Image (cartoon, rainbow, N blue to C red; front, side, top):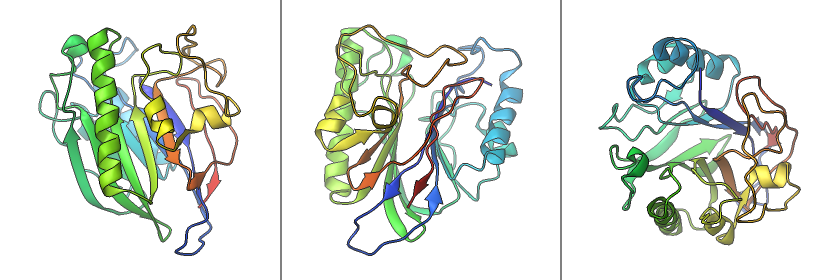
Length: 273
């Protein structure tokens, strides 16, 4: 099993439609499902078996909502052992699909997939229709707009420009379709707060909060251009930073605690809805 996993949860408060209480958790997970001939993930075991294990973990941990990225050629193996009631159909393997899928305990409407308008061929970003997905989910009677993204990879200027254009694109879609609503944007941003050419700050400038910054950093953003603090495998603690992010608008609040997993960096937050 490989990939990176970030788990958090959000509390909705102050909604004019009335108050609802409850609990849910949220996961974003790059499942590294490229064909083995392209990327073997450098971990023991074959990718099909490991994909089965990923599905088992998603089921046994009883995660309420899981956004996946790079869910390409081993999608069926994950779904074979996962047991969530609601699951997006695959858009296909490489090079046809975007690798974005969601499994959840709550139903949704209006699933939309959007390809990035700009990509950089470096790191193979133009070989699949990478982009973002949108869905409107009713979580215990409250509607939340969920966005799942996989940003352009790499570190050259073309990658930086493509990531920035992607954030502009998703923000434009949010402004057109989710204005004034509860919103969660999560996925593989391929960006860190320490990156000199970061673009995730455009999301916080637009009113989003980063769950890792709030929970672990005490609301303090790492300095752009500072030395990166990437996570080892396993992560020693949660002060290291991964490129997988969960961001939410200020209508949502976080409460909770954090822990680590032996194979990946995990931030877990229990929350009231």
